[in-house]
Length: 110
Image 1 (cartoon, helix red, strand yellow):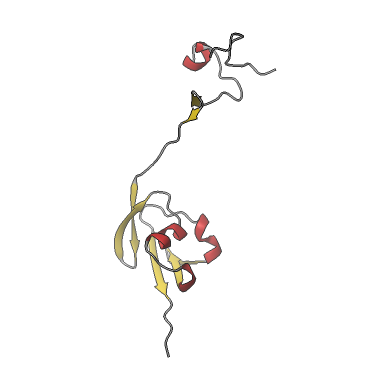
Image 2 (image 1 turned 30 degrees about the vertical axis):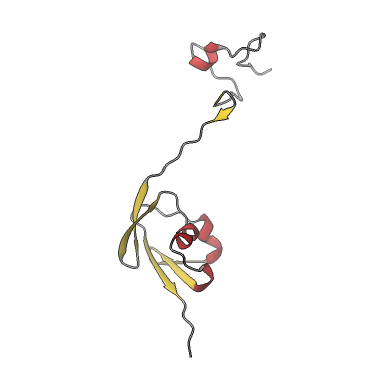
């Protein structure tokens, strides 16, 4: 049987909340009055796009970058650190500090 941080009266047991001499039980809630806390990292990283240094939010994917640049994903090819990245991989490919991208747009004409 798992140890509950709740006492029999329904009050939160301070020993669990404060960490006083007790191990945290399995399933211990990391929230405050029902509100979960989310950490936002609005830090920017520097990347190079077509030879030009730019700042983008940390954790951005290639697809998010294309949306930020207002580029139609159906009309571009992306090279990440000298390797072609296929469009199905764009949402899962995160950009890191110092990443070098080459973005080529397809242009029709006759």
